[in-house]
Length: 169
Image (cartoon, rainbow, N blue to C red; front, side, top):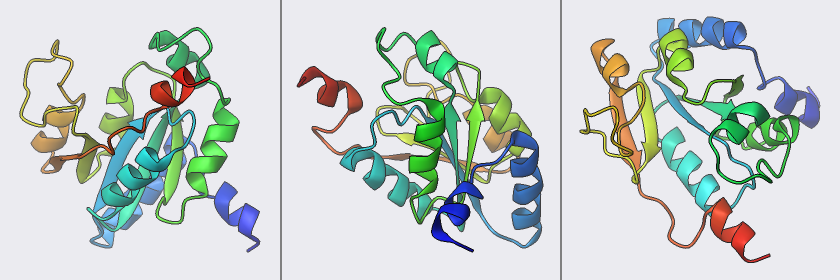
């Protein structure tokens, strides 16, 4: 398989992701799930995703659609890169096994559908927070635990964020 075809083969629909994850889990592999906009890929993103990948055998990244990024209210100019470009860039990372889009503001529906073994977010979230209205609450954490999975957080790389990069313009 050519390099670009290999990258593109990691970009899948929710249905394809579900089937692949069921296969991996049947093989006894731990499936790690994380999500985000990943608008301008930077050192913080790469470090975070690499550490997330280390928590299991397979890493699935759910990416906000352009419409859901806008709905999050990050900035009127966001996303900077359109979803097709963000999908390709994330899929090009060797430690990412699947990339899937989600249109909602939160990945809850995707998490319920995919049933990952491990749910991962950055350390700006709290895996022990149970108040869903708290900004530190990890969406899907209760559901993943009830299904027998675990929730983890990964330290962020100081000084690296898309917002910080854009503020330098």
